[in-house]
Image (cartoon, rainbow, N blue to C red):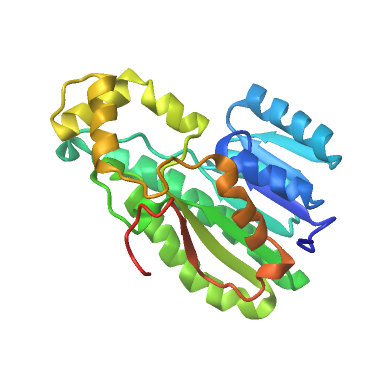
Length: 270
């Protein structure tokens, strides 16, 4: 399918790995000129080089933390007038005892998962409105709709992001600016693998669920309590084609939606 976005300028914030990188690749495949940002500069520059060589499009890497004003300003300077904006962020680590989640921890989660994306959108929407065309896609988490006690610092901030997007999307849709969210479930990404092997996170989850503090015990608990009907965890490219579609000309009639991609794990009709 021709997505109708060849030659468009696209930003993938959080585009060096995982779902962000996979989405960047699908946008590059569609012919977009890319700017990708991430915090880990070596991995980011390698991703930009590989995508540019594979798809023959310009790819500009921006080493920046978009949860900070400095990081956002670096992104704004590198790509002042994108047609397409997609944002994903490194989620807060899974928590331990919920009563040990402090105000400082909440502030950090909100800065990263709510204020950072909103400030990026707020900066770029006026230009999209003026040009009469724009696409914005947040790659968030299904815990924004499906409360999960171990994602306490991730779900609520992203629920607020969904509320923001639902409100703002209707306001700017008449100007050709189309905004939506994707809510991924459990995906076998680099980030998930890192979490699975992080002793501190294993200890947090063991504390929360009152388990022995071992990787084996935590893994067994998750297999028993997180049943995915497809029988497997998704990989990044199970999400990326949908993200690219929502960034395309073909998505002009899809406004303010929250599309869950989770292998059927979240049991609801809405």
